[in-house]
Length: 204
Image (cartoon, rainbow, N blue to C red; front, side, top):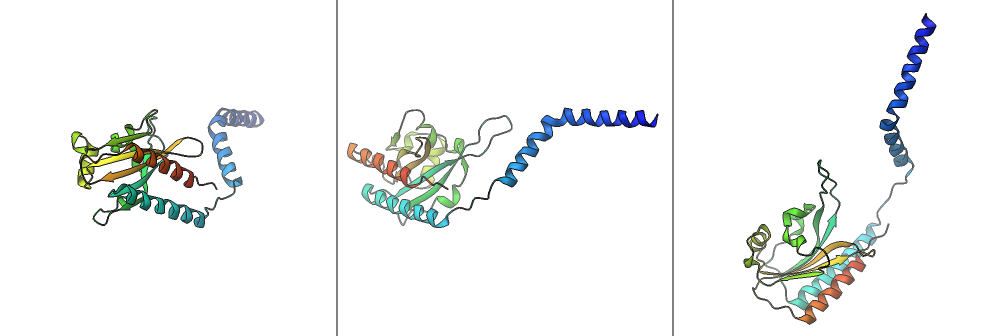
């Protein structure tokens, strides 16, 4: 009788293990891989060198365009909401500002892209750049934000990584309204956004 009870308990435990394999096996495999995978140490010197190169180029762009602010914004993966929608984020990576313009970087880190709305949406699809010579024509959160920071006109250009994936935005901001941007300046900013994309391709 006792022997039958032991067999029954053993069979019950075996069935329980088999039934729960889909639950605990992926967790075990993930933990095993984390132990095996070597820890990656970022090359700080390389990152600082990239920052210096990008900062120098932003300073040159600001001077060439006679703008008040020039910044690079980069996308990052913010995971997903519980309903499955992606929570993509964007950060001000580096900037070059006139003396009378306050820095944005400390206030704009990992901001959900939908908060900035038009800043990202206007560059959707095959659009590679967007010009707005008068922000006051819009009645949205971005226009109000630009007004708060003393921006009346903007030029935005896509920045791609080496795989051709849209990775960020080069933004050039002007204090004055109706600041015409010539075809030559558009080509100049296209070239600069491409060069910056080449610089910021960090490889471990």
